[in-house]
Amino acid sequence: MSIVPILPRPMPDAVLISGRTVDLERLDPVRHAGDLWRAIGRDEGLWKEVPPGPFADAAAFSAWLEERATRTDQVLYALIDKAGTRAAEGLYLLINIECAMGRIEMGLMLGPNLARKTAATEAFLLLGRYVFETLLYRRLEWRCSPENTASMRAAQRFGYTHEGILRQNAWIKNRNWDTAVYAILDGEWPQRAARLEAWLAPENFDAKGRQKRALSAMSSQYR
Image 1 (tube, one colour):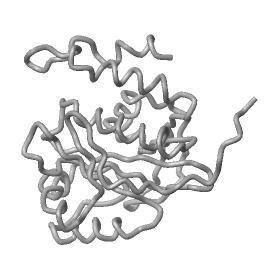
Image 2 (tube, one colour):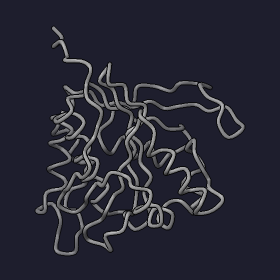
Image 3 (tube, rainbow, N blue to C red):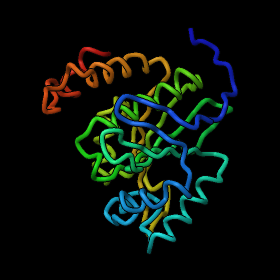
Image 4 (cartoon, rainbow, N blue to C red):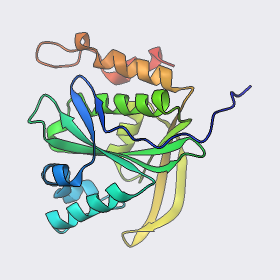
């Protein structure tokens, strides 16, 4: 028997979500645009398989951030790596938010300084906790082009379930666009969170920061 949810759910409104290695700061285009342009905005390859971008210059990128920051159906967070320069090195997006249904879609753009670090994974755990445990949403989605292999790997790594591919459901960048759909449900979240917590635990890394157990090796324990 399904538990009847309390709907609608509130809009995300946290200004700061702080973790051990990373902070998620609510996007402020004035403060974050310069750092984000250097980290992700000017890398055309990052924007090839996502709907927005690429951007002609820093001004165009800043204008995109400013427009996104004013929209009422999404909330963006800049990733601040505490172990680095404390600059904004990536962007998490909560988009297509449906408060009435308790559904949120998540996106991620990651700069090279966060590659192969724990910060992006911890940020996902922090944001997932906020969505499911604080705001009590029912469903967290991840959508991407099937050609965006990096995004599909990220979804699988974080513990999303692949639900299928919507064929030719959009026309973007002058071509037909298929969409791979992934999701985590509220009832699945405790196991997903426990798996991520176990991998992120300090004792899972040696003195040089190398993982002792891969996240993929922990999947069978948390189902």
